[in-house]
Image 1 (spheres, helix red, strand yellow):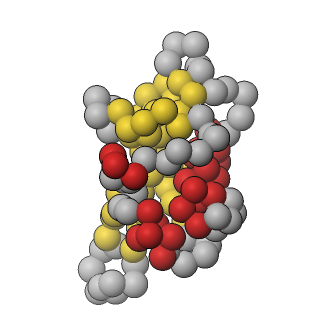
Image 2 (cartoon, one colour):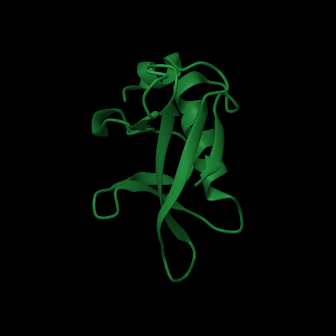
Length: 108
């Protein structure tokens, strides 16, 4: 997704976090983000759309996002002793919309 596509999502959009990998030290997490779209075709199962930011538009903001990890297919986030899913969604939300609480999140 491009930054403007991410910013166009309505406030309160729920992003789901999947932990793809965690380092032995616990200081590096690979987290994949996706959202479930239920309003497109109500008669079919919900659509799952991955939230992937294009490489040329990667966030340049002060959260501990270190890039997209192609091996584990997720965002690489450094840090520990906090909810890194919240940290990632908060940072992406702040980067894309200016409002750090624009998106909600949940772990899967």
